[in-house]
Image (cartoon, rainbow, N blue to C red):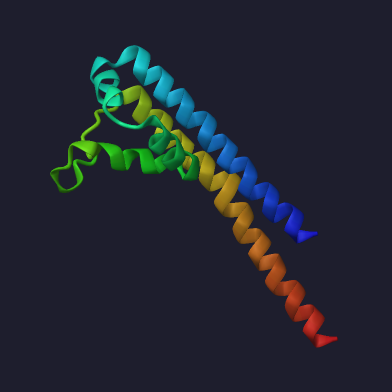
Length: 115
């Protein structure tokens, strides 16, 4: 039965991240000219894939990592707030339930090994 919950608490956060990533990309493309210019030269599929894994990964794109232009995007304050909210939601809908599932699984294995 725990496998069902494990699958649910993996699929729902991924769908949440993808929807939030699409929302951020569309909003930024409409409102932020610098973002729109940046998107024309970069593959959007990569951004959606990264955002589907975890919304907080989108902040990597604005980090200026190693001076690469790929990591030079400038998000608006609204987009950064969405990313922060998505990170908090991920903690609640993904990380905490997965921790509880692992703890339950550990206790079930210990109880079964006693008998």
